[in-house]
Image (tube, rainbow, N blue to C red; front, side, top):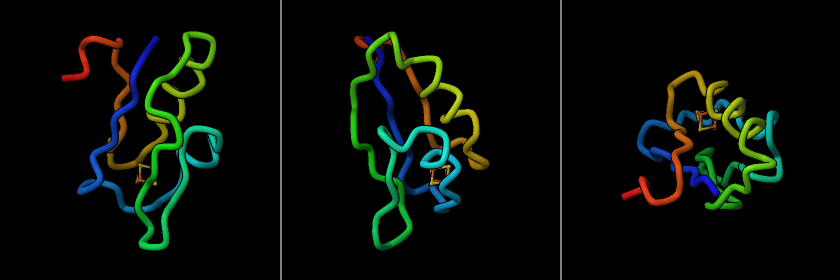
Length: 69
Ligand code: SF4
C-alpha cells in the first residue's frame, strides 16, 4: 500500500493530476487539489505516481505506507 500526499500551498490548480487519475484527485471550488483517496493499492500505484509526476509544481508525492510521517 502506498500513500499520496499533496502540498496544498504549492498546488496551482493545473488539474493535470485530475486528468491523469480522476478517481484519486479532484479540484475544489478554490482550484486546489482534493485527495479522494489517501491510500493507494499497489495495483493503482504506477498510475497514481504518473499522475503525481504530471504536476507542474511537484505538489504531489507517493510514498510507501509507513514513510508518510
Ligand atoms: S497537477 Fe499539481 S498543481 Fe495541478 S491540481 Fe494537481 S496538485 Fe495541483
